[in-house]
Amino acid sequence: MHLPFWLTTALLFPILLYQGKKPRHTTPRLPEAGGSLSGQYGEGTPARSVLVIGESTAAGVGIATHDQGLASQIARQIHQRTGQTIAWHTFGVKGIRLGALIQMLEEIELPRAELVLLSMGVNDTTGFTPRSRFRRQLTELSKLLIPRHAGPLNLISVPPMHLFTALPSPLRHIMGWRARQLDRIYRRLAKEHPESFRYLDYPTVTDPDLLASDGYHPGRKGYRYIAEALGSRLI
Image (cartoon, rainbow, N blue to C red; front, side, top):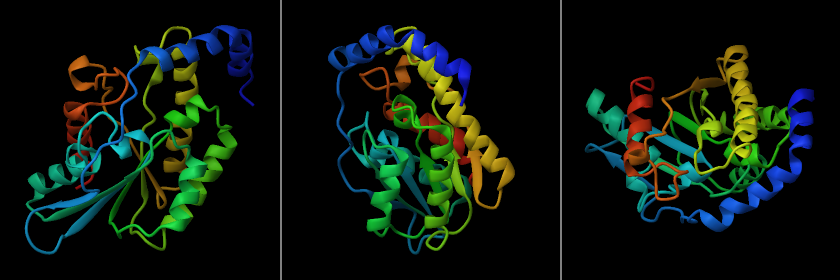
């Protein structure tokens, strides 16, 4: 147990409870993206495939269609840098936590991919998923994916929620504290088990021009910005 975090959270709980309800009434609730979940850049048989799984960023919240989203834009970056034909597919659910995502993945069959990226952590942060459970679930997810997909699971860094200006203080600072704890689990797993996990961080998306209308999720330019930051590391 991380005692300082839980003591601080307990002391601030009445304020956090009030502030946690407020954004639900004042922040626009954006839908998941529409359009095809798959595509490719280039002609002929793909040399590689990109698969992004996770929460709202994998679901394309903040954009109109999935071809503007993270999986598509990462595939586009790799295609432009290598000239290879790159396929992409995305699977995300707005508001989902890691445990529920694993349950869904056990019931469906996704396209095989050489590059699998996990975009996760915000809902496990706001839902206070225990760190031990979060780490255990990441290991479960890796074991689930190994028979289907080549290479390590790429863990996209948990967003720095203390910089989410759509959240009031002290709520955003508590959420940021918790997000950093989960992000450290990503880093440790990648360091301890490089054959199974790889950690990918990217510059913080804080420019309003990169954000969707809710000031919370990336917009079209934001997804492209993240993809540009990650693309060179995935070649």
